[in-house]
Image 1 (cartoon, helix red, strand yellow):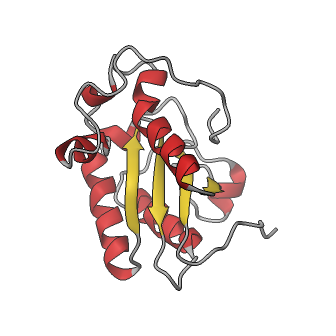
Image 2 (spheres, helix red, strand yellow):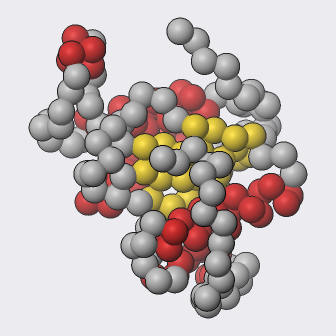
Length: 177
């Protein structure tokens, strides 16, 4: 089955990508591996990471694609497969995955949203940076080490106390479960 995905060259997209076993903390346990795989994929298939947060069982990111390119699906496939190949086997695999020789680390699909305008972009960046607080990992966004909020602070885009004491939306419109 072929999935319909937004396809606008040069656009910005918000993504949610989940582990298959949501109880595992592979993404933060192996954050250096994930970082190296993303760097390798970006060197061959460029894109800009505007914002990103890596949590134990899922990640959110906003990417901006090159002006004549819309193929984010290949990039995610390369990231997911590259990460999986670098981890020791041991995860549960259903019969379908085992029959296809697939690992059972990632959910097969991912969720994407084409960013519509500046307000939509800002809302998704805020969601990314606030996500570790939403899930109860930290009290403030700056306390989470696997977040682009640290780059935003270093560049003076937000202050270190951004969102302290704020109540953010916790609805489920961003592809999380």
